[in-house]
Length: 321
Ligand SMILES: NC(=O)C1=CN([C@@H]2O[C@H](COP(=O)(O)OP(=O)(O)OC[C@H]3O[C@@H](n4cnc5c(N)ncnc54)[C@H](OP(=O)(O)O)[C@@H]3O)[C@@H](O)[C@H]2O)C=CC1
Ligand SMILES: O=C(CO)COP(=O)(O)O
Image (tube, rainbow, N blue to C red; front, side, top):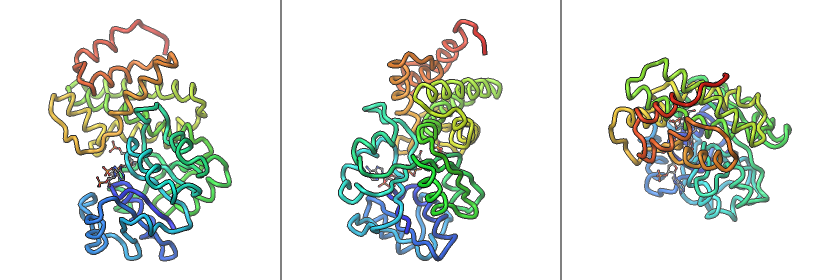
């Protein structure tokens, strides 16, 4: 049995993928909106994934009291809602294996998702599922490879087997820190790349931001105890590449709207916006040089325009690569 909390684009896409593959699996998808979940259960579709049919066997529910009592639970709500979700449902979640699917750093604390989980539910077993994948691609059954990280190799391999499908290929890891930081920090760099393209600064500027942004990600990951090879893998370099180069990315599109001086729909989930500030604060506390993250924070908070931000980056002292 697989349970998924959060019936947005990603939670639903994972549910569709994991249920479609096998009658032997049963997937239970929970969302907080009772009307929307009843509608999904009856119509077998969702406005978050147009054109996708929910497979037979997938249960859509809004009552946490019906949470299956065994199997892993995937958490697929936005990062800044994670603590509230865990706190509200602490009784049902406290001793379970919880697979975090959100990407970000908590704004109020500067903590990674598994650190928030450890604070709220110290008896739960944390894992993370992250890497380059758009919900629409997963839901359509297109090939995707992700990282599944857990504290022990045995746990990671068990989850890898339980959650992989033919088209959703999971690689196991024991480096939760690296996997989480890769997924969180790449969104900040994607905003920078979107802003550069939106402002007409060109593909070369985007490549520079992506590469120097990757250097910032590696710098912070090393300071926080991640393994360097994790950042070079799917959850770091892989997801950075996807998100900084695709119009499908909401973080990239948000950055592009800043670059063009246009408004962006505040209802759209843009994890990199809060994570830029959270990361900038952690970098400042630790004395880490993260200039791209700093200017993205200024752009998101409308304290900087793109021209000033680029000028700040370009006028820094020349240095070794
Ligand atoms: N979309 C993608 O391609 C990918 C997304 N992710 C990550 O997955 C996470 C979720 O993103 P995504 O599904 O796309 O976002 P969406 O905006 O599509 O959906 C977010 C979902 O979270 C629910 N939600 C929000 N706040 C709460 C809360 N306090 N309690 C319970 N549920 C809540 C929303 O409910 P409601 O509908 O009622 O508002 C909605 O169903 C993000 O961290 C994202 O980075 C990772 C990989 C790919
Ligand atoms: O994380 C993602 C792809 O791996 C989704 O990116 P966005 O949240 O920017 O759409």
